[in-house]
Image (tube, rainbow, N blue to C red; front, side, top):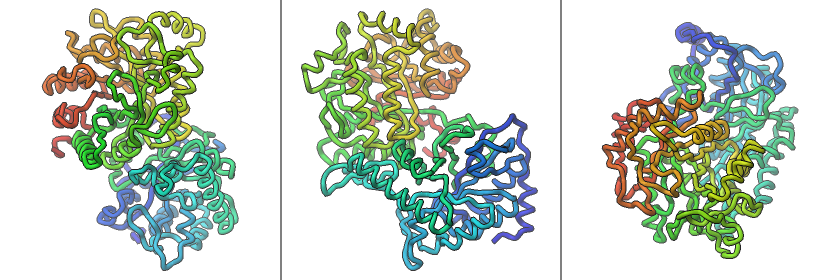
Length: 617
């Protein structure tokens, strides 16, 4: 244990004042294991050293942060100017050795969230922690929990009974968070039903509630979801059992009285400078730098070729050092612009392969990028010709099959497809491409609907689809495509109005730069407007534009212009000019991993979210 004199010295050393600011929102920090040396963090990247924790607490204390209890935050009573919630997940023995003395020194409160199945594990057994079993002695005992709780500085929450593990989430064997995923049963070659999933989660939450009430004679009012992963179904079950707070690892501002608490994950990378940046610039998110990958180009009937393609894509995305991938979830087998099959089990369309979940999870865990699922909004070709004829938009020029947004049956079909996607995969956001276009004869009707309700039918449809996905994904970000329309170097008035509505409706708007916005796909943008001026012309339309706008460059169209691509030099120049024009979020597509087009170096040198991209060539 660190000597008290050393702790006090470090407190003075790191008590560097921050810039003054108005009343701060709740700052919720998530810690796990707290170890003595940096070498021990190699075993677990979520671990922090004692020195790091001392630096954190010293700086927070010196800058006026005061801890609050869960009940205090939930009720919104007697909140300090800078409220702080410290949480420690998993119940490591280092909480007793290192954390409790620091809480006493700083007079800070904390929330301890143990896994009750691990507490019930016999002393001579091991705990299944991640990929490596750990000795039972690495974790607190029930007596340790009671002693910590008795100090008055520690609240105990549930980290579930035995959901801190992965369940097989697809035929490929990927382990997905147990609390938020349908389990795949290879023996039966099927996924568990929604009813079976609910029952599994319900029984676990009932058991953790029972064990905590038996051992502590109190029922916790907060559930801390393992890996921060949960969905609306699990949240509703937890509320029925009395868990009034749901604690996650998702982004978002914490609002007093809200059922959800969003936390920041602390790890071996979170030194004092990183914590200060997090606190002093809370709205400064990682830029959205994205490529688009089609599963049509990755898929193969041959398992060896499929694995080779996937490994190539993963390595390519890793080397690019981008932050997101827009990943196709439907198949366009006949390459006419309409989805005629799915890459997940779903209704109304055949499944080409159960592939989306596997690729999305590999991208998230191996390439460490956010995944935005890309499904059409209306461009579906149903196997039933009669249904296609009944629901299709009429009067479009050079267009694939599109369903009419005015038909209730269309909304039901598309919502069911999106719901199935949400049930069978884990991802971070949804990309609504601009396949949702009106036939000329229907545009007047759409404008009339906009004037009457303030929302056009296609926007209403996409919002409903996002709500459907949030039932199973929890937090979900929305990205809506908007083709750019310019006249004499400036966006048109109609375009500016639509752009402002999108900025106020979606998390991000992807302004697609192309020659002919009315075309289903078009050749890469080569107009005379310099990209730096284009960026300023777009971002000048709304005070929040820079934070919520992606400029998206259609590098090539694999369906119609396979040989019509921007050169790497031209693309790199366009990327650079967009950045000079103040654009934070940039995307491009379609990526050609087989031909290395665009070249990895072109993307990384311009779009990398790494501070020093040249160090990782």
